[in-house]
Image 1 (cartoon, rainbow, N blue to C red):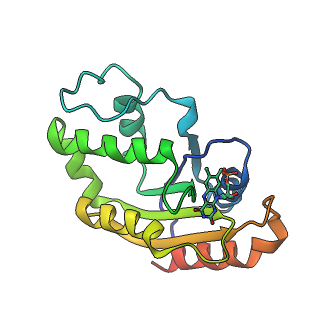
Image 2: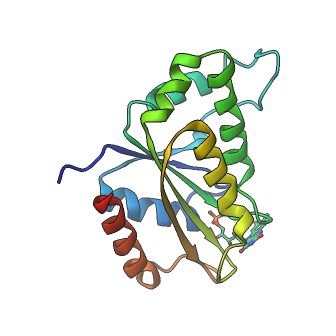
Length: 171
Ligand SMILES: Cc1cc2nc3c(=O)[nH]c(=O)nc-3n(C[C@H](O)[C@H](O)[C@H](O)COP(=O)(O)O)c2cc1C
């Protein structure tokens, strides 16, 4: 079966941190691109769209060259990280001023990677993504959550990573 081209967008307050290590493990297995949102200057959503000179327009064009988009975020206060939220807010640009690009999202598959200290993430965390992907017309392939007591210990998550990747291949 041919693998879909995949990009992982990392939105974490630290690199390398726990979410980076999870994202890198997936990137290795899926031969996916890994882009760190911290390396881009992405301004918050602006109703007047005076932020179009930042890195978001170029970044989203690159992201849309892939067939599957995986968003990777730590759980910060039951929610996606600030950098991930800013990125997601900016997807509104595509619905307002670049509708042809926005329509391209409808042909994409989506998934989520997350780390947190809780054994199980609060439902509201994943719901932010599932509702957003549904609104954008993207097909959702699920979330891989790695509970990290302190550091990300790869061996503790190997089975879950393998199983998640198998699930993606089966879609
Ligand atoms: C600001 C902040 C808020 C956090 N809130 C939560 C939370 O609500 N639930 C949780 O399980 N872990 C929470 N954590 C723990 C992180 O999600 C966890 O350590 C994660 O693996 C960090 O990933 P990172 O190294 O990519 O930042 C929080 C950590 C920080 C720094």
